[in-house]
Length: 265
Image (cartoon, rainbow, N blue to C red; front, side, top):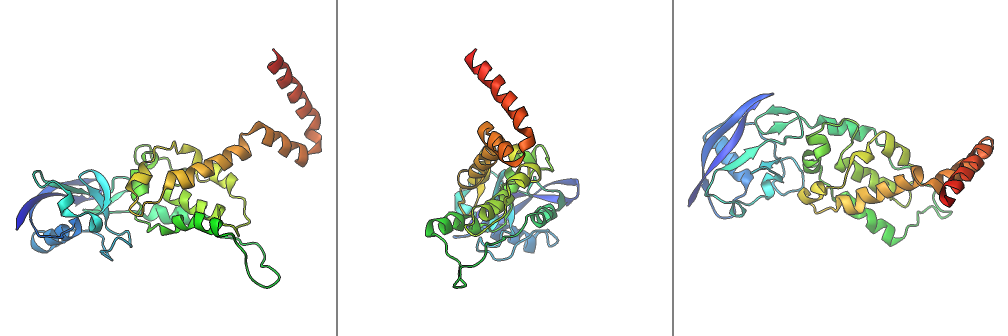
């Protein structure tokens, strides 16, 4: 039986420090087992969230050696025991006590997302969808709301941009916007309410996702392309104004003439 040293962050609110504890390591042990051993033998009042122990509830999120991970899915044999194993709370959220953080902001953001608004049923009372459309959003439904992606996102973590919803909720919006039955246009709220433009595609959220959801490639980038096409494509803007407001036609003609002269010069 091997022995490892753990450095666990303990404290409340803005105050806290690292405390070192010995842990007896057995075969098949995960980091959550080690933390619970510390809790039972050395620090009975250690605050830590956990529930399913199977990587499906997302409760035991923490930073293990500086990397956001699920403690129940991080095996001890993956870690080097030559140096103390560092366990800290998620830094992207307000600290409450020990390894517990306040993630309530996530639920407030979730309330702002409009639910699925399906189109009317077919005459036989059913909905019809293409299989490829269904498969496109199935990946997003694997999210367990561990909020590791929210924690590692530098827009939230380093810059505290409150206007930015974060990768978890951009993925939820993607699952609705790409749903074959949804009838709502969500592009304006993506731009103005949920701060899609703040994401600069570092893909750090994808790297820490325990469900291997391609958050950036399959969710955020397609949303950015849709928003860019709707609001920043000059031809789309021109067509929208031509078809929506006839009073602006003289003004638009003037812009086209000026643009043509600029291109010729």
